[in-house]
Length: 270
Image 1: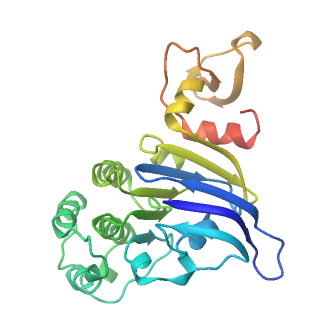
Image 2: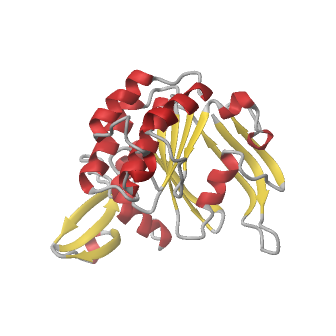
């Protein structure tokens, strides 16, 4: 679905952001792309969607080279950017104008998501709040049924109920033929829905693992205290004591704490 080989990229007058970078992502999964500010997440998304061109290496998405901007490529990939703007038109007018660009667009799905998000087709996009416009953009993206969906900070601007709706709608909307790539700092918003974690730092992949393997290998817990004999890999203080990551005992599994996992990776304890 997405295959990157020996990618090199740099902005003019700056040191290389990616150098000999490789990554492969398959369909049928939701991938969380994590990293600190400046790690290269947004640049990687722009490379995958064909908005910028690498200096060297190969990027293949759905059988196409993204920067070539082939119409068949563009009709099967959709990106929800962190920053966006709309023309001064109603939701219905926007959908009528842009949905034909996506052959698999599902108007029935769109209407269902509108009902979940409480969006009215007659509403003027630029008179909506930022959160409402973000919900519309997510609804439109999911309704395109593109094989690749790229979401950059999709929960920014959403209130707590809307974040819950987003998770529910995303999981119920994505099929095995699709791949969703989510880049976010709001890791708690996606920890229950992702199938794979990819962490990059300074343009390098420092961790990638399927979530079922993470729960097989690691155990996440909150404890009042611990000792060296508990073999804690990483810990953080919290109101109830400590949030900890340990080796799994092979008998029980825990829910993944993506934020704790990320901090453990960045501190190189895992």
